Length: 487
Ligand code: NAI
Ligand code: MG
Image 1 (tube, rainbow, N blue to C red):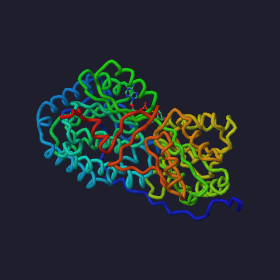
Image 2 (cartoon, helix red, strand yellow):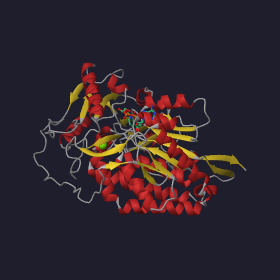
Image 3 (cartoon, rainbow, N blue to C red):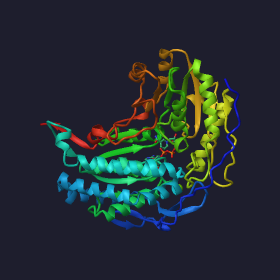
Image 4 (spheres, protein in one colour):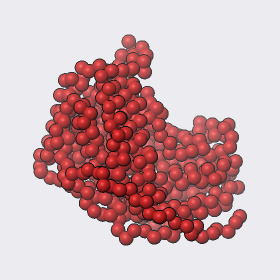
């Protein structure tokens, strides 16, 4: 095995994206019934830029009274023009929203990066185009629901309450809103408190698209605002993406109600490298799986399983690759790893790193200058990790990888499935038969073969076990917003 060399000594010149064309207000109210509506208690909170700690805008803090107003508006729109509209007409609105997102993609990408800390390259190449794709895909279904579910009568559920997290703020808003509208529902959506701005800009875009008032309502706030949506008596369905702890709370609160529920929760994905895998591609897949979006990804490949006979090669190549990752200004087009979304999340990640060391893990982090201000975490890998170690068991939601080895396929299946989660997994091998043998046995909603973190609106996404239930995307995702009855 070659000796580890130091990091390459070349550097890229800074290539910052300009934020000059971004148009942000100093203060945002709720978007209710097509109107910007101040919070009933006059209270606002601040959304900051996690890369600088600077305040970006003030945002309304939603009270139960505000949620009540939003649900009323959504119900009125459902009973009114939207509920009566043909699928063909609904589809036109969805196409219009999709095209407007494409037109304003650059602005949305910059705001996503400013508010959440993710590298502009990802916001530009993944989050915003995929969000537009979700609207395009669902626009196509709006007038074809009878074909999507042959021999079944389809009817919308009514008003959907949707609560989303901070890791893919705009994309999650699209995942939630597009299928709900395609199937004829109306929506009250709450973005996460650290990343509300792209959802509020989406409200502006939706108004520009001429969507009837009240079809989409955006209420901002933290957990209490979310709970007011969950517990509102006139909501027919809750769609939640976030932590497993809050998902469980929501499930409990809905246990005695008729509300439909889909939960997309945490994960602890296994990324499995077999000894015949194309190692260079696999290393790229490992990096993409865990360092992408600072590891703020529910399906992040946070547990790496490497077959013993290729362990040295994989680790040598992985560390060399980590040495070349650029951590810093998320607006710089060269940046690979941006800012950790909040101080609280950074503390959580640091706590896990300490716990990993205490549990006997061997840590490696490349050396790299970090900006003086903001929330930063170096890409981190742990080897010598016991199956029982906290960093192999719990979701960290940061750029921290726990590596284990295995000798046989049955052994890795057992280890990979030994987790309360089951959202995603990855397998790397030269042989299709070996891939399929593993994909069949892994308890995960998505299993990627020779790739990682690929998303497509046509493909259902969701988890097993404590990763939640219900699917988003594809036909399964449409069904989650419909009452289906055999005719
Ligand atoms: P969280 O689950 O508290 O936040 C997600 C959303 O739920 C936010 O919009 C939040 O305002 C809302 N919320 C919070 N409490 C609520 C309640 N009682 N009722 C209704 N809505 C509520 O996640 P948090 O605290 O920001 O992150 C903690 C951990 O959760 C992370 O470290 C990560 O492990 C995990 N997480 C997983 C995500 C995923 O995509 N699966 C996304 C975000 C966090
Ligand atoms: Mg923010």
